[in-house]
Image (tube, rainbow, N blue to C red; front, side, top):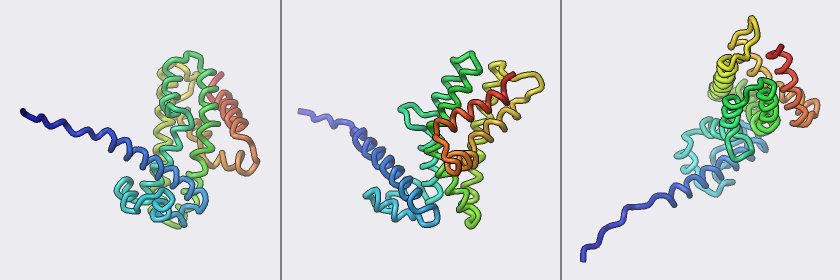
Length: 210
């Protein structure tokens, strides 16, 4: 009898690796928000996640890369589908620009409480650490790139009003998604995230529509 060797199935291993990665990111977020960026260490995150520091380094490479991954995860929002995917779908299927802006406001209310506190921690630490300053610039550039992509879709859909440039739209979107605005209105003025999202939608309508 010839025994045929079954191919190795790595599904279980990949699933476990994914669960470990998610757990590390969740623990890193908690440690960051509890201790701040300077006092957060890879060792502390590893201990909270129940893994070795080597595991964290192998998965993310460094503390700044770990924080960048935490931010990217926060940007996905709290629903099953990532917020970016939902935004793209909204823009591709909704012909009414007002409805698109309402959707952007709702996504802002969902995502900002998750990501803005992290960006504010990075911003505070950037003043004293060149490596963190580079991370801040990288994250800010990524946000600007995303807003530029949204503005390009806005232009392609024919929503630009007379004299308006896509890059101006990108600047408006970039401004109203800034963690600094979230800090002013939600953290300092104690607005609810819902009120903040409604404010963003109202401001975008004023700036982008006739």
